Image (cartoon, rainbow, N blue to C red; front, top):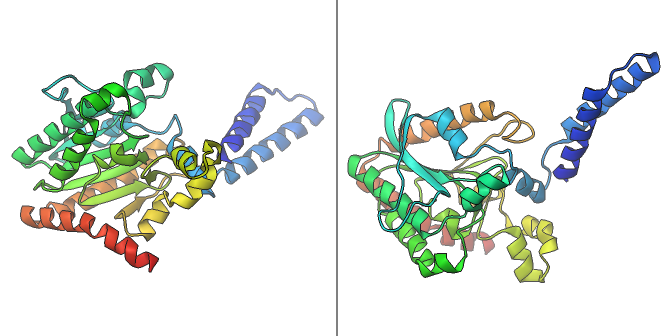
Length: 314
């Protein structure tokens, strides 16, 4: 698996950095270490669904703040759901994209334990989805396209979240997003699991990064339900058809955005350029459509998904 490869690469890099070859034998050993490192880096490429899951969850993968800084200008964050509180696991606000005012909304994950505690590991509570919906309705009022960046292990399943109406908040987002009259583009940048992801994913164009995942639940949850054994998550990942390539083949997404070799975290600047081009291309097409046409085609697109899957199984 990629995790083991990554650990071996880090070990070899550390040895090379600490090495100070002086004798001929030491120089030969250094060259061999360097060759081994290059071979490992070449092999560092996802081959299985489990590899994709690892890359999608990689702690150094770009998060929503990185995308906002790289793709947009004049970002103004809007906080709070105007009912209860501000959920920091969802970030949203107004920005400029290629001279066009847009509303940007997405899940927030941290890189350290402290950062993740602040944003609840990217698992929104109802207040987060209500904040997102408030910003979407505001975008519709002023005619701004909506861009959502999806990266979450799922909505927070805690007692307080349920008491505050978690299911209702997600369901309302699904219903309201299907009727919005402005263009919506959603990009799955990492992990997209369950209704927590779909609550930001009812879009005219749903795109996925090459090594991202999108599924009804986590592979661990799938394995626990099916086999009563969460350790078989890698087998579950293979069966769930959760990769971008699987979902594109099934007709459930509209495009795949290539990632740099080894994953988005290896060359984020190169990734941002690719995302920028893809996002601009889709928005340009959608902005030419009439509002009524947008709404009707978006609604029909999601209504047809079950029919397409049923035909596939026949």
